[in-house]
Image (cartoon, rainbow, N blue to C red; front, top):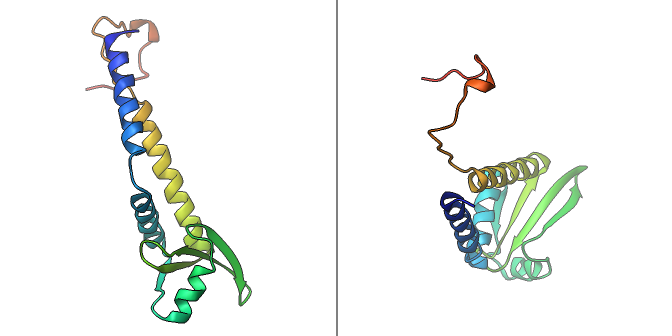
Length: 133
């Protein structure tokens, strides 16, 4: 294994280690930012009745319900914002798509390895496949 590959593997391991060091509250806040960006509405538990209701919901999990013939999604956060996020199918789909895109981008950044070899000969690969500077 070359020194460059070892260095890349060490950096990748450190990135994973640091990613694992985020607190639960930080991970939840990041998820909530994504929920709001996807179009979920935030309803604070601003009364005793709402606080009692939110305590009855599983924290930090999606729940779905049918209301007026349409699916709605609830996400309860009794820890960070003491609120619930409510969204329709479109908001939920946007949230899932955004999370998937973020995971793919993170994975690509993690596994992309810069490679420079000045002795590499592109000639055998044939002309015309690459348009360079």
